[in-house]
Amino acid sequence: ARWFHLAFPEARVIAVEPDAANAAMLRLNTEAFAAISVAEAAIGAEAGFVSLIPADAAWGIRTERAETGLAIVTIPELVASVENGALFLAKIDIEGFEEDRFASATDWVDDAFCVIVEPHDWMLPDQHTSRTFQQVMGQRDFQVLIQGENLLYVRPEAA
Image (cartoon, rainbow, N blue to C red; front, top):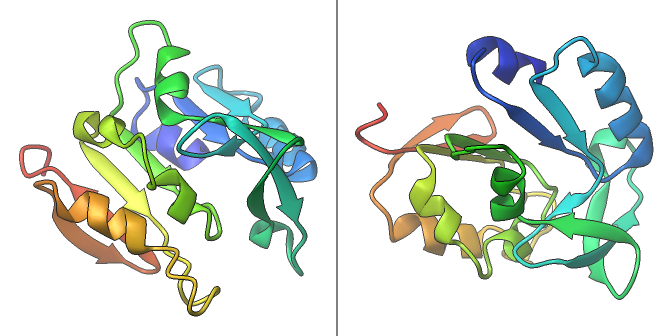
């Protein structure tokens, strides 16, 4: 969040973090930056709830849909929470939940100039968690760049 704020100082950065301890650390690390806000939630295609799946490391906590639990927010809801908000960039690193995030309600992709996704097929073999985002992004006019473990989809006019 801090890196994106420093790279785009006039932008509003909303960081979504489902784990309470990680969200607390995120708030602590960003409290000096008024343009950064933290949403303690999960991000998904549709409203609902998730439960957290523990991992060996705090960065690896996963989510799965549930009847109750932590709220899911959507990208359109996040954009609407910013007065005169417009989506420039979405970075999605959600430990396999990208299958849910791109399963439906993907119109927001048409408003983004850049979408960065960290796929997790390596972590969840045979679950095809990147299939939905590959289908959604492949139907649009983005240049695809690979940077480390991230796929960067950039509109040609933004490049």
